Image 1 (cartoon, helix red, strand yellow):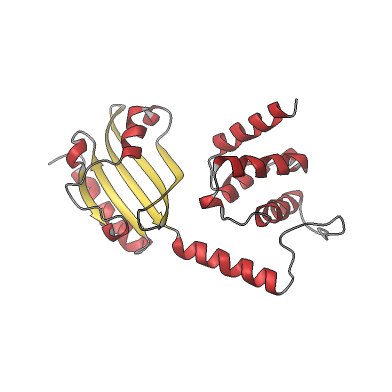
Image 2 (cartoon, helix red, strand yellow):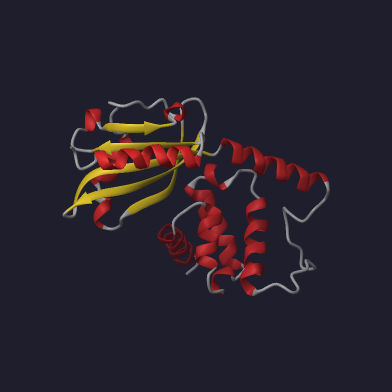
Length: 215
């Protein structure tokens, strides 16, 4: 029995509990041209058992990301038919050697539609959204609550959801948040990273670049 076969029931379990918008794929990376040994909800990308590693998966392996972390999460892509996906990959290691990948791809189309619906309602009923004026109320909230409110207001000033933003657009948001002093609040980095759908190290990198520009 292959050491990876014990993960196959986990693939089925995850596929059942996460639902049809989540594709779960188990790879044996020792066979890159036929790496897929288990898949659930393969309709999302069309993957089947015996399929090969994608270009991004090969890049992750080539760059040896598994030496730095046990997993990667929150990197996005679009399928050929326009579906927006958010990916995560868990590194399966044996004696610090990478032998497999357990990958989860979330089809976020339903979330994007919900986002658009909320934006439409916000606009239709003149709710606070696109801008925060000098008279906006933030009384009664903690500093992190206030930071959250300002992050959301800044995001709402863009006509695109975070999953579809370019790196330049995300850096622009970080620039605006830094100008508002958001990142002086404890926990704001983590909060902004979640809203922007990036990792904390990525957000720190954006912030570092923005502050270097301002020197």
